[in-house]
Length: 191
Image 1 (cartoon, one colour):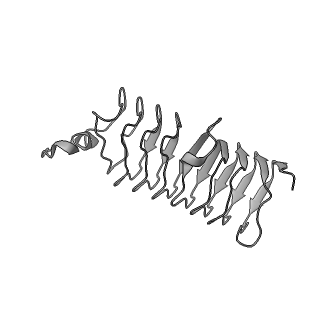
Image 2 (image 1 turned 180 degrees about the vertical axis):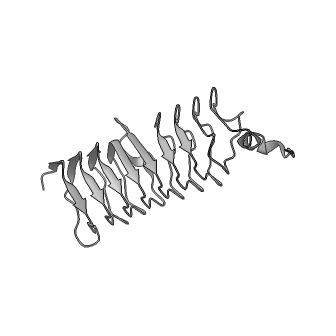
């Protein structure tokens, strides 16, 4: 079957477990209240699209292209973003649940994570220069050998970042959050 090209269309309440989406390129499309849980979106291309209140748990992302895509109020548990097509990869997340997801070695400069759950998420060897983590919970997120230059974590919490194992030049942290940069020293800091 030939891949399709669809532009400027809204999709509401699509359930991929009942009706699969056509493989192809979706440009300037909006997906609202859709259930893609456990779907295989490998080789799909999404450009300037928006996903709102979608269930995207455990979807397959092999060679999936996300170019200037926004996710809002989505459940995105256990996704492997490192499998995505790297060319033009750009997305933002607002009020999303990304627990147990992986961005291993993913290059996502200037990505915005806003009011999102990032517990136990893998950011190992990520390129997050200039990214913003606005009011995000990073409890037990793995941040190791990660590029966080100019990243903004001032309003986020529960992270543990080793400055000796990560690049944090000109990154922004709050006074309260600064203690999380010293976790490995097992010291007590009083206010």
